[in-house]
Length: 473
Image (tube, rainbow, N blue to C red; front, top):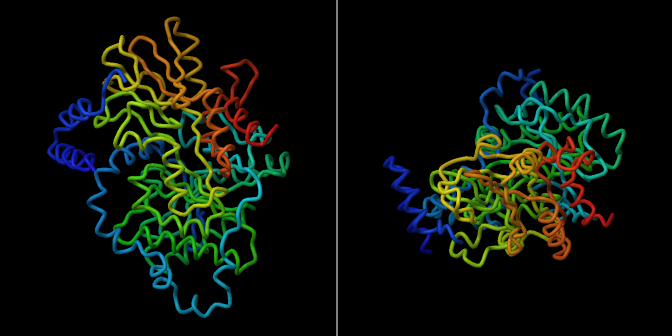
């Protein structure tokens, strides 16, 4: 593919320290402006550990932008592990082979309802989220709430003091008020929060320690299951293979103990990551559902110095080659073609946007050259409430809706923001419903308008739009 050559060339330029030249070449090619601690248990640590950790989306966004540069590098290892039948037989221990459990008995069943999975990040992990307490969440708008983020150290689950407080105090109160809700612990996340996966999955013993830790956490906090958010497995060191084995062993333990715990995974949307990170057929066997992180397709980096939509539903007519793959529809079809059942595919929809600083304030088109993040938000990450404030307090702001992509963007002076609002999310929810997919994953409760800034008194308006369409309210 032509992009592979271009990507490798840009990778070399970055390696030589001439990232500005790489950015310039990208702009020429694609940026057309017109167009408590024990080994087997989870342990709680002081919140100071988290100081300095950047928002998880920043790390995911960076990995998305670099994924295609690593395709050729990983292809050799990928060929060694792509045979899933061989892999599972090879990894199962003798104890597994002698188990009385039938293989089919540990397969995860299909969801029997349309899901609206809502992510919640506990207070104090990021000051941008500190105002939302879990007890303030409208529990009628979600079927599942993934609470995070926990991480892994020495093969055991680590829970911060703030997360411990959320799970011990706030979650039980919300569950009492809304007994239909399922609560899952989200383990991992962007950047350093996912570091512990690589060491944990390498051998049977370390995975066993992790699973024991997981069982302790689920039991102690009375959780309904876990969501594994490893960003991202690699073909190197057989991580792709061992991740599938981890899912198998977790599911096997659930069945052995006759527990109805849920097991979900959060996965990358771009093909360039997913192809090397996941064995889709194996994930389909053992995960109850899969949360597709179908957002962060476009954002500012030095390698992509132009505006773009955060979560376009379809490719725009002037997008070709790699750019034509960076949209929800392409990602959904890639996962389906590679073996994921429709009812298990939960499409990620963002309640936030990305901001850019325009080089030319008179060029406000999608693909316009940008010099950096916008002033609004945190390093380009803009919550729904901040977007409404931006539109309400900039008299000369303009709001555009791209019908092809079912996405919005707004601009004022040299600031440009890509985001979703009620109209665009309704379009995407109808797509999910029309194609018989498993539901929507909303990222996140924290970045929706939980204060009622956009429309006075109307809280969580974006999630509400999606819920009403999918659940026929």
